[in-house]
Length: 120
Length: 106
Image 1 (cartoon, each protein chain N blue to C red):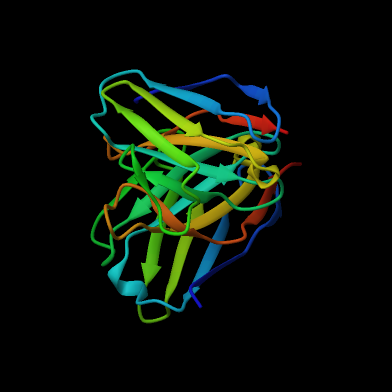
Image 2 (image 1 turned 90 degrees about the horizontal axis):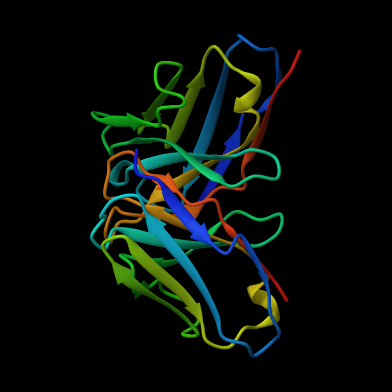
């Protein structure tokens, strides 16, 4: 079945780096744009970044631009989020999500999320 | 950035009630508006896309309307499994933004 499985979360000190991965299965990964969405503890959803199906284009929320890099390896069916210069306010659950092919204006498949805690 | 504002922030309703959630954009977004449901402890689920289109498998008691800056999500007969938080999200801009959420309690 269609599945997204995130990994790579953990506890990291402020200013350090972390790379998240998202393994996709059950669909043609290379045909879909992919997103990262995060949720601070007890807070709402925040869209983080999107990458085009072939990796040629990407966009970032202002809050992470210049610090986070989204990328993908279509040969490995894997999405990545490189997070540098981490701050306490980056703490939260990070979800990868598949672009909704019908309109590309929503996401229709979500992973279970991976928790990132930025703390000294 | 386009700001999305939902109201109310929370509501409590009974089974069978009609529930309405409003989402307002800080500028016109045409119909580029999506609604998601997030049950406690779970990942969000897509409910409605392009303001009024019901996603496959979503019960028909859910409906969406609106265009421009003002949008509405309606649940015509609230069910126990509808407990959770509902979010609106705009895709008019390449930089998507999400409302703060509306928590629905039964």
